[in-house]
Length: 107
Image 1 (tube, rainbow, N blue to C red):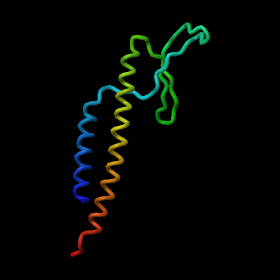
Image 2 (image 1 turned 180 degrees about the horizontal axis):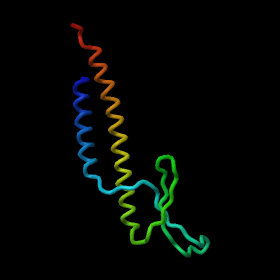
Image 3 (image 1 turned 120 degrees about the vertical axis):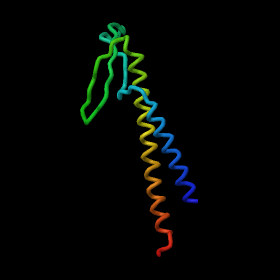
Image 4 (image 1 turned 180 degrees about the vertical axis):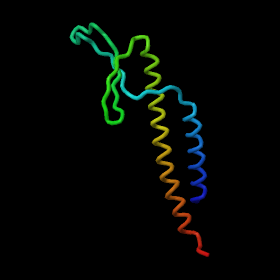
């Protein structure tokens, strides 16, 4: 049974690797529309905020780049989901391998 599960995990990891190869340009963060005058919602501008290497950053995004930036953020979120799944599977795989080795008769 453990051998079957190992093969399942290996197949899932292979699919994750394929999916990672299909990820396009990516960028972390949250994109929000801000206003210079919040009460009257005037003076709209876009900004992206993110933390990288323990440094918080905020960049302004031109209106014509909003859709592209949204797609980059979507790609980054997919990347993170795939990596998290891969790590969880790798941990399970390692534990199963140790269990299988432990159960093998010693020569």
